[in-house]
Length: 505
Ligand SMILES: *[C@@H]1O[C@H](CO)[C@@H](O)[C@H](O)[C@H]1NC(C)=O
Ligand SMILES: *[C@@H]1O[C@H](CO)[C@@H](O)[C@H](O)[C@H]1NC(C)=O
Ligand SMILES: CC(=O)N[C@H]1CO[C@H](CO)[C@@H](O)[C@@H]1O
Image (cartoon, rainbow, N blue to C red):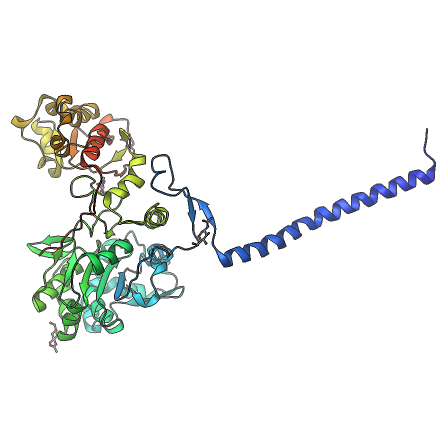
């Protein structure tokens, strides 16, 4: 049964040929594939950008956001921004941490002529120029005023700023330098972008909801940019009102024109004033008031200093549209942009929409090592030692002993007791009364070190460091009375139309 040699040779030859062909195929296949993929990618990215699973999509918001994120046309819903300029202020210690995400998200839809970037060091970031707001301050002033020490060290740095300046250690110095930027920045802005209708000032951790902002400024507000107008979220320092800078503030063209053109000595005067005052946003208000008699018009809560995880949802923070948010880190900015991009609707973004899509799916009964910012009413151990030991912030918010229910009197003793305060607010018999549900005063609590505090709004909050020792008192526990929150939301009903705020003096 042994095959003759010729036939065996033939078979071996055949096998080798087949193996060679297979090897060649295996060797070449990745290249064909690669070339094909490359070509395919080029063609597709030329026409459209990829579609991804929307990482914000979950069971709690599947009615509100799209399952997939089509990144092809990010500016499709972006409004017409004719007549506006965004002025974004940052500092050299943070610019590269914050600006790239701004430029990749909302600002990618703003034409270059519609924004200016100011810092305390002239720098270049890709195609974008960061102007030095402090460049034109008198050299003698810079030498004389100790707050400019950081400015000099930044300029003298021969490597990247991060290698010269420790941003954490220099935080206070960066803040002290910041106040000198504001008025020179207004002057440079008017020189570089004169005659626009509205000037929107923001910081690198401010998020601007452009669709709302433009709709409000142009259509809804009825405000005339030829009048001298100053809009923002009002804060006070020693009885002097000003628009909080981080929340963003808005000047009409007329306000900026008058301030800058009629008062050419602004920079040196307000450099001097800077040495006496805490903050640059206050200096802007002082200059507008002292020179032009322009006063801030309160635009809060639309112009807002909070962000999705810290907004106090509930009364005043529900049907109101949102124009700005603050303290947004780069990831949070990207998240809200993604949310704007993947909403199922392009209707006005109200505060409740942020809650419904981004917060509600994450709410639960309680979280350990968590602070939800419950800070409206506090319950503490009445013992005088405990009272003395406690933070004055909590002490001042205590309910009077003779106004407390039995449950409230026990609230400081444990997180479980603290949780009962909200549960006990309305008895089940009352819960059909809509007014009562809407007037609920207790939505959430936080317990730590024998202090129980509750809040009149519902906020998400943030993780709090787990204590090192096992002392149960050291732990931060936060909880939400979900039944009360749901009842409030149901009683409130749909927002039939956005509750636009009329900015008042
Ligand atoms: C993604 O968006 C682009 C541009 O708007 C559109 O042409 C394309 O059809 C969209 N793709 C899908 C799958 O919806
Ligand atoms: C500008 O202001 C500075 C500081 O207040 C003052 O010293 C200077 O004399 C002023 N210059 C003019 C031209 O008014
Ligand atoms: C939602 C909210 O207000 N969170 C607060 C939680 O507590 C920290 C301090 O521990 C605050 O910084 C947050 O603002």
